[in-house]
Image (cartoon, helix red, strand yellow):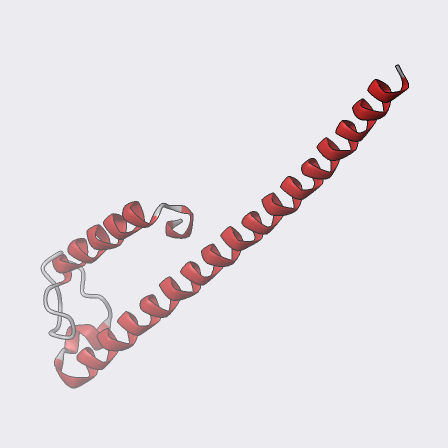
Length: 107
């Protein structure tokens, strides 16, 4: 979803998601404030809970980077398509101008 949003909207959504994750409590410190445990490793807390939280953060960061790369690629493809379309239309305009000149010359 976030990959289709404008950068300022995407950063807002991302920050809102991160702020809502504050309900989990401190990452890796056991069960969160929201009532859900987040799994047995997280409930246990300690080093394993912190490691699990760090791995989760890396996973989401990697996913976000993949989405941004896909969005950039999509935008570049659209730019290339529009450039080709502009070139095609310019050739069409030039062709029509040539036809008009020829018609004026024949008169």
